[in-house]
Image 1 (cartoon, chains in turn orange, blue):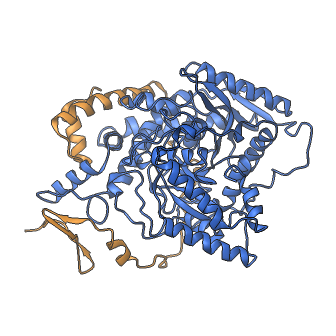
Image 2 (cartoon, helix red, strand yellow; image 1 turned 135 degrees about the vertical axis):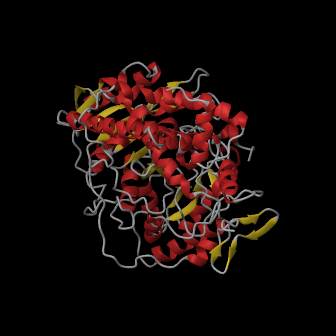
Image 3 (cartoon, chains in turn purple, yellow; image 1 turned 180 degrees about the horizontal axis):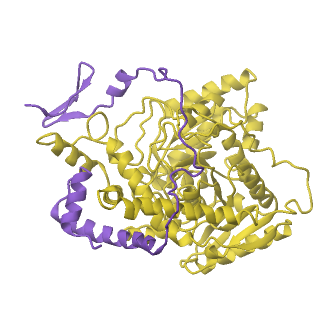
Length: 104
Length: 499
């Protein structure tokens, strides 16, 4: 199936990546090439083949339900980005991260 | 000294012929001289590095030495190392200071190895030339206008230029083996699950695996002894008994040390698409293996060609999920100007990621989106099983598989940068082992002449069955006892003075 500019914009929206109109056109041509490569898969008959997600078909290990992580909040918060929109202050307050208001 | 093996360096440290500080300073001086033009390292921290070297000297003086104590190692910038800037080659993480250590970093710390710095790489390990790095490309020490391969291009160039004693890499589709091939190194991607992924920045979690990049199979074995092992913090780490990867290396001398070894040669690895100059080097290496006693068996891996389409569904799908964490909220790049939360996400990600990373996120998002999941993701997982089954069948006829690691020698910088599909074909011989979860390595096998007359390294790939790393390392080691390709070094004299 051929991709359109609208498809690129829709996927970019789902991926939360802003694309300009000129970027969308370039991206369209590159992604069309990559999808052409991927289309080779459709020629293979895979009826009845169990999908493989782990190389040794192992399921995930279970562990005891105990606390294993140490609290690194202060360390983590040192990496918070600058608030933006004119403020170079770190986007943290009282141990929380600051984002634009989402509830009126 | 810079050309000595890890074993020789360890012996010199133990005999107090040299201190770790002296050894580390030797490499630091070379880094100062050559790195400004080679660009193998993204981050250096002389104070931290020297503090580790001093601590190693104290440890050695106390008689508490292990094979890598005091040895200066370069770490790919995909591994979190506490207090070190850890960028993964991306603007997104340009200012990220790792708050904790990756498992392998703590393993190296525990034995007293010295961290020389964080090496350059393709952004989020997505690339085969190191050209997608936000921090610039890396020069191949064998030919300065060519790429070192990728994504572990900085580690490869650092080992080849002797800017470290050994380095770490990661391999999702060939990112250890292809740069090892292009830079004339020995590099090993272990069986999936052998080395912990904890603290290794995720690209495609079902394929990512860390491994050593070094001067010889023996050096790789010593690195593996530190890197491998169970870690409960990685849910896919395999709980196996600790293994000594050097155990097969020092068997008594035999005239035909590999007698009885069956080597499978997949006809698909020698078909169209392989450069004639690379094919001829690989054939010479195979002839050498016959002299060592190995028996050659023709095998077939019929689904090899499908490994690239399958990979470019699965890896981007997993990447689109893994990279959704970069949202500009808690760490990483946040756009300077935005209107609301959605706009902040969209702009932060548009600015923080480079073109190739965005392409892969978009491909991954597309193949996972409603209506396409079965046609792409599920289909790819089914063909992944067919690819793995090819290897299961092949290993009924042979002990190891050999072929080229990459279809060509190092190509010129800029040559494939605008053609993603051409770049993806660099990994045609390496991707299938990641899909199957098998171990693979690249071993220096000689040189082919580039069109400009430059001698460029060629790597022989050795693929083993699950958990057969020790055998593979021995197979490579025996070859390195009778050949000297792995001890050749590039001429950096033309770079001197540029620093």
